[in-house]
Image: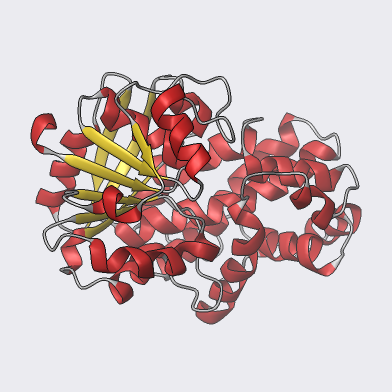
Length: 340
C-alpha cells in the first residue's frame, strides 16, 4: 500500500511536520507544504524543521515545498494542519487542487470563531467531496514526542468504516498505534475542548498548586467536555477514550503543551498579550475558549471552567478571582448533566 499512496500535509508547523514523519517513515510518499520557502527547503535538504522542531531529525524521504499545487497533485490523502483561525482561508486555496477521489483529514484541534463549526464541517462547506471523505486524527499526540518516534496512539475518525480502516492502515506503525472511531463530532470536540481545560490546568500550575488540584481540575474538566460533547452529537464513550480523556491528560500535564504553558504564565501574573507575543506557535485554546462557551450557551450546558478561562483570558479577571468564583459556586451533584 505504501508504494501506491501519496500523502500531502498542508501546514509545516510542529504538529503538521511531526505527523508527516509517520507516513514518511512508513515508506509512503509524503510531502509537506510550508508557508515560507526557507522552511520548506530546510525540511527537504537539512531534514529539520528549525522553526518548530529544532534539533529533531526528520526522515530523509520527507519533502517540503512552498508550492501548493506540487503538494496536492496526485495526493490520495490530504492532511490539513492549519490553525483554526486560518483554516478556511487556506482551504479555499486547496479546494480546486484536491483530487476528486482524495480523502481529507483535519489535525486541527480548534473551532471556527464566527461560525462555531468543527473543521470537518468547514471542509464539507468548501470542498465538493462525498461526506465520507472527511475525517480527523486526534489523541494525546504532543508533536515533539511524535517526531522523536516515541510510542503513542491516536484515533482516526471517519463516518465510513472502510475509509477509517484504510487510513488506519496508512498511518499505523510500530511506534504509532491508530484506532478507528466513526464518531467524528466527538473526536473533534474532545480535541477542541481539552485545550480550554488545559489553560485552566496551567493557571493552577502557575499559581503553585499540586496534584490534588490538578486531578480535580482534569476530572471536572472532563465532565464539561462530556456534557457539551454529547449535547452536540458526540458519543459518551468517545470522551472516555484517546480523543477525550487521553488527550486531556497529556495536554493538562505536559510541559510541551502550548495551552498549559499559556495558563501557567497567566497563573504567574503575566498578561495574555504578553504571553502570546512570546510564542511562535498557536495555542488553540485561547480563541476556542469563547467558542466553547458560546456552544454551551446554545445547547444549555454548564461550562464553569471554560467560562472562567474566558474571563481570565479575555475579560481581565485575575486567576485568584477566578479560583474563588469557581470554588464557591452553588453546591451540586457530581454527575449533574451527565447520563448515569
